[in-house]
Image 1 (cartoon, helix red, strand yellow):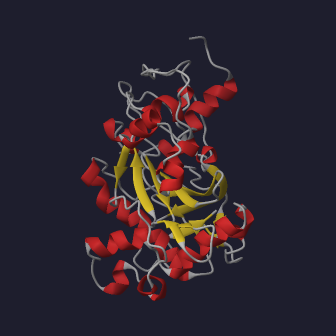
Image 2 (cartoon, one colour):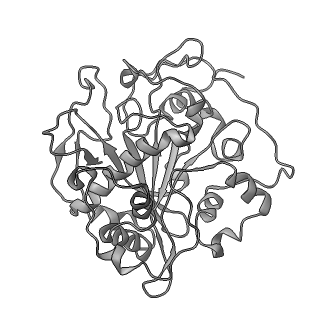
Image 3 (cartoon, helix red, strand yellow):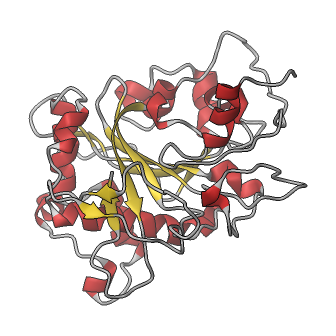
Amino acid sequence: MGKPSLSLRLTIFLSLSLTASYSISASSSSPIFPRRSSPNPSLKATPSDLLSLLGPKSQSSSIDPFVAKELTSCFRFLVPFSPIAKKNCPPSYLNRKFLSLKQKGGDLCQREENELVWWPPRPVLELARLAVDSGGDPAAIQRALDPTMITVPDVEGSKEDRCELTRTPYGRRFISEELNSYLEFLFELILARGPNIGLNVSLSRYDLFHGHLFLAIDSGRLGILFHAKEYPAYDKEVFPYNMGYCQVGSNVTYDDSMNLRNILWLAPLPSDSTKAWAAPGVLVALDARPDGIIYRDLIPEYVNIARTIYEDDLGEVAVDVNYLDVGNAGSKFKIFIC
């Protein structure tokens, strides 16, 4: 393979994050893994196929059976998949007030955690319905943000390393504190449930600290694509890539768990009619192993080493959601929306 263009080289090494600013020195080429071919070369999975399979029967039944089977084999659910929605979200779910784990004074039981993903608290459901009713307009989500600007903190020595983790040096929060608490809950649930599927992560600036909130193609369904394993440590044998300032000091090992670095949360999908719900919420890691359909069809070849699914392929991106823990118990905020 010839030496890639400057723009392509930058894309390769920027692929792990659209939220960072890097100083890059790239090698002339990247390892290319063999891609398994489909029995029918014309059959390729699309981001819309992936989202439809995680939706109601009316959507999932439209996907080619081969594509559906191959995609399903790459789903690693962090919360059991519950494809049959209740006609209406039970009032007990709608009216409950979400409390963080610390506020409750202990861990939520597994059933409660599952239910919080399937049927989130009212502010989350309202935002999910707003996303669909707006026709998938990101501005509808952005209007739910508090206008107050909050300075992004120094996380684990990032400023000393000249590392900029976020798009902007300031962030915002949702007006609803329940929404902000729910976002914290999602990060912490991925941390807790990840080992069950072979995904060990930390909520650090090198690993899982951000996700991209989007409104899905066609349906407008609200979702977040989380990216874990953001800055693997440089290793001349397994990951010989210089990713710039934000990689300095990384203890994230590049190994098979990189296949699971794309984690998808989907909010419940509102029905087209009345106040019913067509599908419950979902939390799933998308297995991008080299012999799978996600790697073959949804990972651009020039970033296959990074196993990155791009949020722009799933829908219109509204904001980035950052979980920045400065390690100070007295810190007021962990969630910063940029």
